[in-house]
Every structure is written in structure tokens, then in C-alpha cells.
Length: 142
Image (cartoon, rainbow, N blue to C red):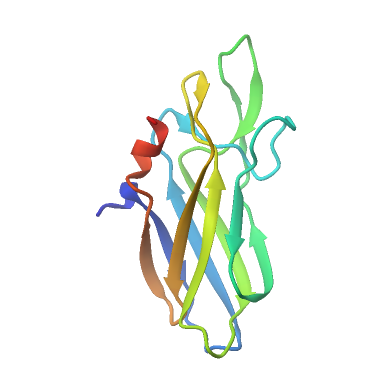
């Protein structure tokens, strides 16, 4: 599996019960984008990162970029390229893995596809993991 077929997840080693930091890097294929966490338009689907069963969860979402999408001069803020989501949370003593979901709406060209929700997980002990997206590029083609 390559990084282009996965969400790359890096965790800092932290004993259970302590705060840990998780970075999820999503590499979006060239020519595609997803909406930011707070899209410009209320009709657009926000990107949302969920974390399961942890305390004191904080999510730092990537900063969007402003793009003219060529649709009648429409300019929007979007996420494109490699984007990092950073989670800080307190890990329960019994936890061995951190789990959650990433919900996003893939857009390519002038079309936005139906929203997707994909699971992710990472070891508490630290290191790098890959969460399969069913071929990330495939999510942009239907």
C-alpha cells in the first residue's frame, strides 16, 4: 500500500492516561479538493474528523487555501494537496488503539461527489500507521 492509498497517521508515544498527539495526513490527488471544516457556503459539506472514546479531545483542522475554481469566477476556500489534521487527546489506561472517522466530500473538476465517511485508527504507543481509504484516488471517481 502506498501513501496515496491511505491516510498516513503518526502518533506521539504517550503512556495511557496522558495526552497524546495524533497527526493524520491525507494526500489528495492533483486536481481534486475537499471542503474545509468551516466551508464558505452553508450548502457545502464540511470536512469533519471524529475521534472515538477519548477524553479532552481537540482537533486542529488544516488551513484552507483560496482557489478560483473556474465555475463562473467562483472563488472558494478548499483543502488540496497534503493536508494535516492534528488531534490532541487524553488516552484512557485501557486504550491500545485510537480510532475515529473522517467525513469529507470529494470534488474533482466541476463536480462534487457524494460525501464519504472513512474509518481510521492508530496505535497509542506511537509510530506510523496507514488507514486504508479503499484507494483514496478512487473516491474521487465514484
